[in-house]
Image (cartoon, rainbow, N blue to C red; front, side, top):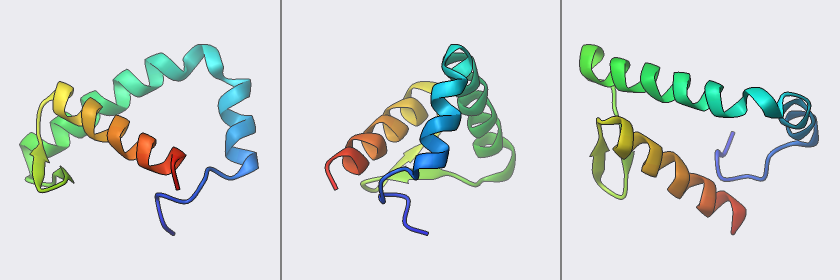
Length: 71
């Protein structure tokens, strides 16, 4: 599975049906990724940059999203 492939229609529908929860879900997911990075030395990397903080992880995911939109 290539994470840069466009989102499948069934996933888009799921997101659309739960739009009011997306912001909270993203916040929780980023907090979990931040905790995983600090406790387990498993990191997200974006262009050679290790994303450890909430802001770094947010920007990493945003960058990946933008790349997906342009593929």
